[in-house]
Length: 261
Ligand SMILES: *[C@@H]1O[C@H](CO)[C@@H](O)[C@H](O)[C@H]1NC(C)=O
Ligand SMILES: *[C@@H]1O[C@H](CO)[C@@H](O)[C@H](O)[C@H]1NC(C)=O
Ligand SMILES: *[C@@H]1O[C@H](CO)[C@@H](O)[C@H](O)[C@H]1NC(C)=O
Ligand SMILES: *[C@@H]1O[C@H](CO)[C@@H](O)[C@H](O)[C@H]1NC(C)=O
Ligand SMILES: *[C@@H]1O[C@H](CO)[C@@H](O)[C@H](O)[C@H]1NC(C)=O
Image (cartoon, rainbow, N blue to C red; front, side):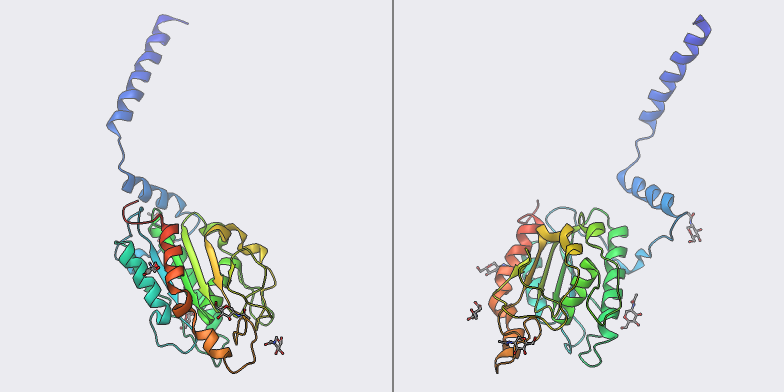
């Protein structure tokens, strides 16, 4: 190697080292650059609907899908979400704005899946360091499970499973009285003994989120266990009273215990 080449290499190495010190890029700008880099293949998400991202530690963005016929909002599960926010300050709650009509159930339920998919994928793109919690009751439970596991029930339009793509963002998913409930799965809670209204065909697709997912259904429930006795509806509507504190503590535990870390 001739001395002049050697000198040139030494000089450019020095330049590279000094330029790397000159360009200490803040994490926020790295995120913006990453978002711009994917702009060529897909449109940037519209982050204008998100006021601020929840802290990356000790907090979660909770998305609640209410039960059929409950007025717009978080419904009966709101109490569990509120308890989690109280235990994990900095967390926030949004309600899935879907119709939640019992009759007609279609297309209310698929609209719920579409609305939840939009809420979660937008939040994940705009707040990549924040954790998400999903909660759903009855029709809202089906909506939540269909988003995670894909829709595979007879009579419903098929949708893709997001379990694999959200698992790193998902702190917990808690559903109650799911009309697609199937007995004997790792995430099942309660003592369901029969079959549900719309048994989910493909449960394997839920597996990526199995470590953070629970689904409550008790024996005799009108929808998740096809109960026929006089108490079938009261079993279906009673889960927050029975299991709300347990579900709230499960969620807090999965967020990391809270507060702080
Ligand atoms: C990102 O893509 C949109 C179209 O999807 C385009 O209008 C916009 O100018 C692009 N932004 C940048 C920074 O490339
Ligand atoms: C959200 O739900 C509404 C009905 O309330 C529906 O018109 C809309 O298409 C849904 N959005 C998506 C993305 O599915
Ligand atoms: C199922 O569990 C509920 C709640 O613990 C209880 O009230 C009910 O008696 C149980 N049903 C059966 C059939 O074991
Ligand atoms: C179990 O479900 C079937 C329908 O699938 C229903 O006819 C039956 O009454 C249910 N059993 C009980 C104990 O509720
Ligand atoms: C945890 O459980 C206790 C009762 O054991 C209850 O008072 C508290 O509200 C629960 N926490 C949450 C976040 O639900």
